[in-house]
Amino acid sequence: MSRTGSITSESALARSISEATDTTVSASAFDRVITAVDASHYLLTPRAVVTPKSVAEIAELFAFATAQGEALTFRSGGTSLSGQASTANILVDTRKYFRHVEVLADGHVARVGPRCHSAPSQLATAAARPKTGAGSRKRDRVHDWRGRRQ
Image 1 (spheres, helix red, strand yellow):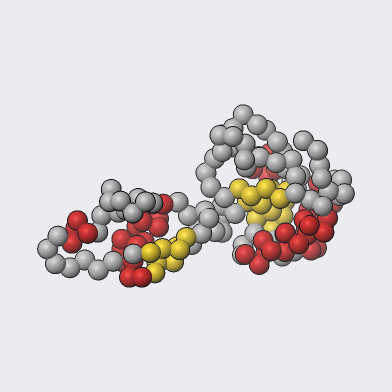
Image 2: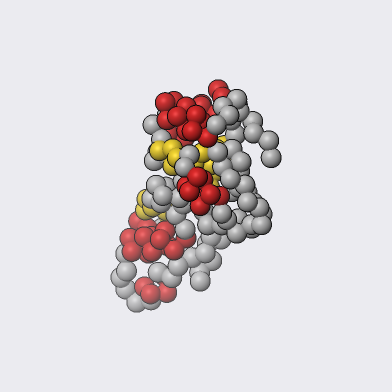
């Protein structure tokens, strides 16, 4: 896979990202190799691993990448069998800071971050729903993503 940007070394790329954004950046060989591994048979080593803490930092990364002609690949969930989370460019790892769950509508709706799996969001919404009257246990069953009771 060819590199798209004009910054040639990993350390220079990490320095440039750090100067242009407020994100945490690593170009260490260990961080780049350990983050490159997913469930696919591909093994592309990113040139830099970026761990943003906010949406504003992600916006700064997009601005940097556009200005420098660099490619961003996001890794937010579990693993990839097809290599979607693999890159030889900049890997943006959102697994650490984007796990929030905001419970809305008396526990019937949840707004979740890209890293939050279904179990924490289901627990948060179930805990927020009122449990009163006969049959309340049936009403409080967890629903799947289609809205069907499980």
